[in-house]
Amino acid sequence: MADLSDIQAAQGGDKQALERVVLSVQDQVHRLALRMLALPEDAREATQEILIRVVTNLSAFRGDSAFSTWVYRIATNHLLTVRNGRQGLTFEAFEADLHDGLSDTPDATDTVMLNELRMACTMAMLLCLDVNHRLAYVLGDILEMDHAQAAGLLDITPANYRKRLSRARADVQGFTARVCGLANPAAKCSCPRRLPAAQALGRLPKAPAPDAPDYDTVKTRVARAEAGLKAITLQRATGALAAPHDLTKALMAAVDPPG
Image 1 (tube, rainbow, N blue to C red):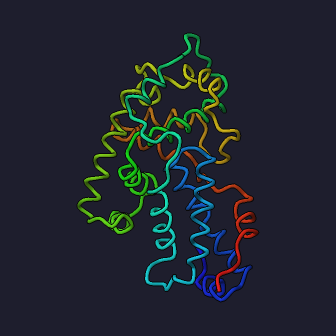
Image 2 (image 1 turned 30 degrees about the horizontal axis):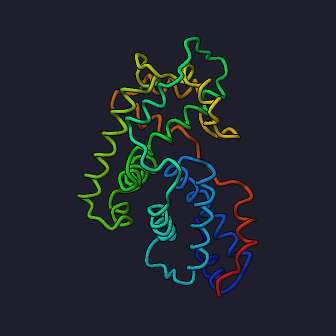
Image 3 (image 1 turned 180 degrees about the vertical axis):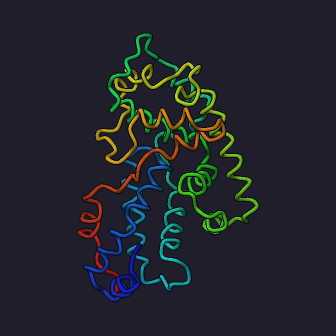
């Protein structure tokens, strides 16, 4: 997280300090954006927009809260307004899509691509939640944020936050237990059966996640997890989801230090 001296120097116009501040928060912003939007291109664009807001509003930071909390508030406020191409996806529609074109001759040998499919499906699943329940779920169950802090970011009471999180958690757990072959070996859909259709439709990311646990490791973890923990085991098995390396460089070329 950003050093206070760097924040103060950046507020005074030090461009190198500003770059260090941006670098210190870009990964946390990108991870939140990607878990909210699922598509890497959308997450990159949203991350850049959020970081621009962090930079242009940096002079307003007074230290009344942790800098990370201040950044998360800017990020959540922006992400609540973002609309992407899969807006309005339902669990029913997503299930039907997953079941369309399943292979009758599954091949489980390409574990790299199976892992990319696992992660893409895991993240797309959350788009079936409305944006308020999705954000509650991401903050609480994926980022493991303190409930009082999450409630504060969303401007709701802790009791209402817990209710929102509980509803989202139940929906994700129910869908995972019913549809996901990793959580339920009897489910119709499995990554090996789904992979050919996903590749044909261009549903897989262009580059593998560098630090995500591998497919077989996650499969073993989920098999060992209790029934109520299988969904969260899958949702957390994504690695850090760090921001693209060139993101801060591109941002610094586009903005001036706050004065």
